[in-house]
Image (cartoon, rainbow, N blue to C red; front, side, top):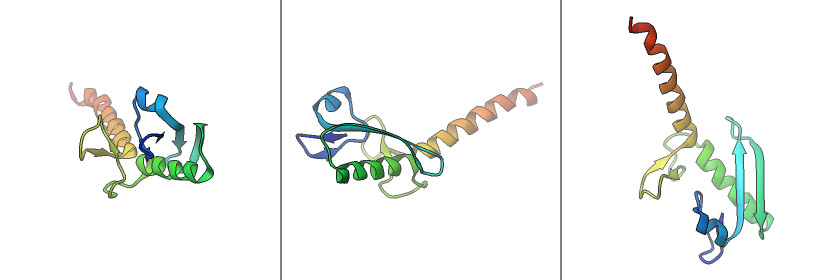
Length: 105
């Protein structure tokens, strides 16, 4: 999303920021980083759209440990999460929990 007043990109906007935005973009990527879905609205040019795609790809698909390649969580300063790594950890935890009943008897 591009904040019209500040001319800055916001990766996880709140409702007020969305309503004030010049443009809003939503993207979905494959596990290999290929763009699958792109929905955009508002006033923007191709350059703005391309930057938005790359920002979103960086948040969603970057390798762990990439400098500046995470998403700020709940506005926390300095807290970054790579969505692909977070999803992998969540699935691994669910698999471990599902398998734990086998060893409990």
